[in-house]
Length: 192
Image 1 (tube, rainbow, N blue to C red):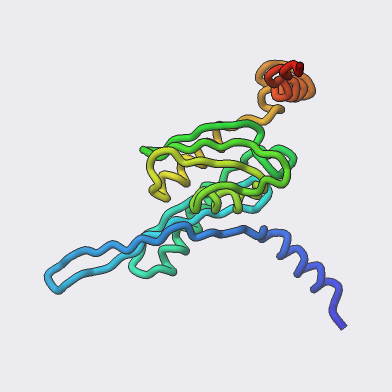
Image 2: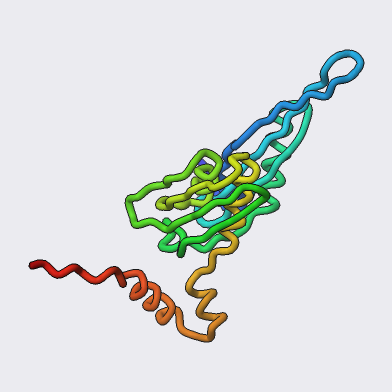
């Protein structure tokens, strides 16, 4: 028979340690040429998220790959940021981001679209918990630049609540304006 006190203790431990999604984006091997030959080192780029709107990125360097990944994961957990999501599945509005020569364009998408994005950007969206988004990389395809540009774009995004508080309006006014401006399309052509 299990002691009830032990049962509660185990549950409290599970609550304290939230489950993070970790994605290894890139591993680089670098060589330092010395008198006796080459000394190899490794650099790892990792994206960590909780799947519910928090994401962070980190890079670590070490003589062994597992140590580099561990360092990168620790750094990513420290640098996590919260991103507002629309209905918990997509971004609120179209946004651009830039890091170095890497530029990205992120567009919100209707339900069922899926994640249409390339490698490093897909890792960010998977860790973030985004289910529907269309993303395009313009410029550098370096994974470091792509991940940092994606995070820069996500940090530039604003939720309707943030816009409403800044303007001194109600959230409903902001959302209704978005829906009416989004539904305005070219007038239908007359048929003969």
